[in-house]
Image (tube, rainbow, N blue to C red; front, side, top):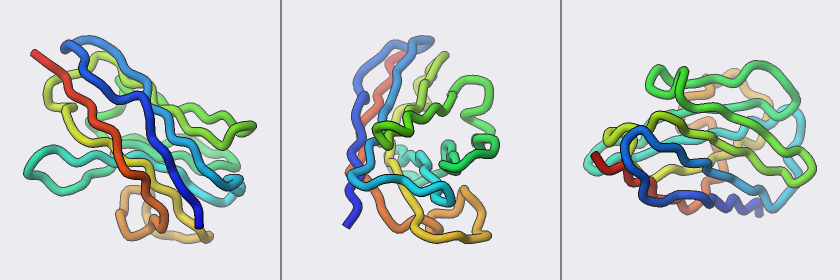
Length: 126
């Protein structure tokens, strides 16, 4: 069973930055996609960004474009989400997700992903 562990959440002022990390307990294979979702209080879980391990462009939500950046560390099977220019509306629990098969399902679809982390809280104060 693959375990995903998120880290890096915390409290930051608006305009600040945070870097979230998601580590996989198993090697991530080239066709797998690692993604970040978030869930704001009272809202449904929503897509933030995703990256297919073997290559290709990262995929970002409109809210993340221009402010958030994905990077991977293949040696440690870790995906980082660098979040800049944070806004209070970015306050949420951020979850890491990993799929486990080659699929044509869109990267922003929750059901695409088999494995989920426990989440890390990000709070942006105004």
